Amino acid sequence: MKKSLLTLSVFVLLSSLTSAQEKTSKKEFKETEPNQEIVYDNYNRWSIELSAGQAKGIKPYDDGYYSSNPEKVFGGIQLNSFGIGARYMLSPKFGLKLSFNHDKFTNQSGSGSLDFETKQIRVNFEGVVNAIRLFSLEESAGRIGLLLHGGIQTSNMKSEVYNTDEWNGGLIVGFTPQFRLTNNLSINADISLLSNFRQHFNWNGTYSESANNLSGQMSSMTLGLSYSFGKEKIHGDWAIIEDKRSKELKELEGRIADIETLMNDSDKDGVPDYLDVENNSLAGVAVDTKGRMVDLNNNGVADELEKYVDKTITNNNNTVTNNVSDGMVLKLVNDGYIAAYFDNNKRYPNTGSTDNLGFILNYLKTNPTKSLEITGYADELGKTEYNQKLSSDRAENVKTILVKAGIDASRLTIKANGIDDSVDKTSEYARRLVRKVVFKIVN
Image (cartoon, rainbow, N blue to C red):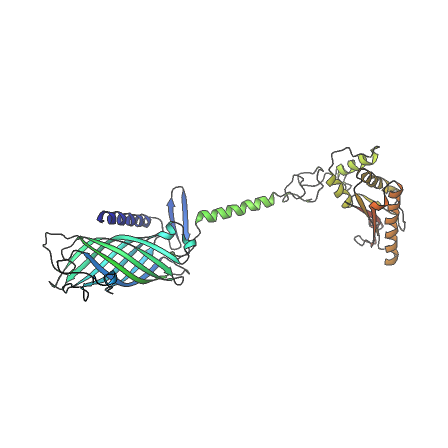
C-alpha cells in the first residue's frame, strides 16, 4: 500500500513540477508536447478552497483505543478536520496547491475506546491534475469535474497525554470530485490518504520510544467550496479552451474556402471568376486571359459566333457541322445575339436581318423538338398604343416568314413588348438597335 501511494504521489508531483518549468505569462501558457504547441488563454488560474469533514487515524493505536464506534454505520462521523487552501493552475491540466489543515483525533462516545485526544496541524504541498481536461472530457462532463492531487505533507502532532508535540512528514494523495455552481464557485468532496515516514506518537497520544519510528497512516474525507478569482469570466477547470492547432486549422480552412471561391469559374471558360472581366462568356467560345470572348474585328460579336452563324446559314443540308455546343447556341439566341431588325415604322425585317432569320430557320429544322418565342419591340417615337401594335405586327410577320419557310406554326408563339426605352431616343443610330424582334428557344 505504501509503495502504491508513493508511486502515485511522485508521479503527480513530477507532472506538476515539470509543468512549472514551462513558459508562462499573464495571458497565456504554452505546453509543449511532441511535435506540437498548444496555447491556452482566457481563464482564471487562482482559486481558494475551504473544507470541513472527518480525519481519522488508521494506525497505529495502543491496545484499548479505537478511532471510531464499531456499532455505527461507517464507524460514525466526526466533524474534526478543517482546512483552507490556495490553488494555482499552471495550465488547464496541471497546477500546484498549498493547504493548511487542523485535525483533532478523539474517541467516540460508546465506542468502548479509552478516552484520548490528539491534535494535529499540517501543511500540504501538492501537484494537481485536472483529470477531466487531461482526457479531453470537459465538453461532455459539463459542470462535473475531477481533480487528482498528490505531494508532500508535514504536520505537528500534539499529545494531550504527554503534553508534548513532534513534527512529522510524509506523503499525501487523493482525488476531488467537483460540481460547478457558477462560473467561479464550485462545491467539492475530497478523499485523501496520508502516510508519515517518521512518527513516534500513536494516534491515541501515547508515545513510542525515540528509536522506534512508527508507520503512521490516516484518512481524510471533507466537503468544501472552491472560489476562483481573476479578470476572466471562468476558471480554467471549466473553460472550454480552444487550442492553437484548432485555431490555425480554422484559419486554414477559411483561407482554403476563400481560394476555392476565387477559383470558381461560373461561365466555364477556364478563367477563374476573380480574373474574369466577362463572367458570362459562352461555353466553347475562345476567350483571352481576362475571360473576354475574342473579338478581333471589334464589332461586339465574338469571332467564333460570327463563324458559327456563317457556317450554319451556308450549310446546304441544314446540319450543324462545327463543334459549338447546343448550350452555346441557346445562349447565342436567347441573349439576343441573333435578332431581326426593322427600319423606322416598318413591319417587316430589313434585308440585313436575312442571315439571322436563316440561322433561326436552320436551327428549328435541325431541332424539331424545340419551340420558339418571338418578341417584338419598337423605339420611343410615336404614341404608346401605336408602338404596342407595331411591335405585335413585327413579331407576327416574323412568325409568318418562318411558317412559310416550313416551320410548324404550333412551334411558334409571339409577344408584343411595345417600346424599348433602353437607348437614347434622340439618337437615330441607337434607335435602330431597339426596333427589333428577338427570339427565345424553349423546349
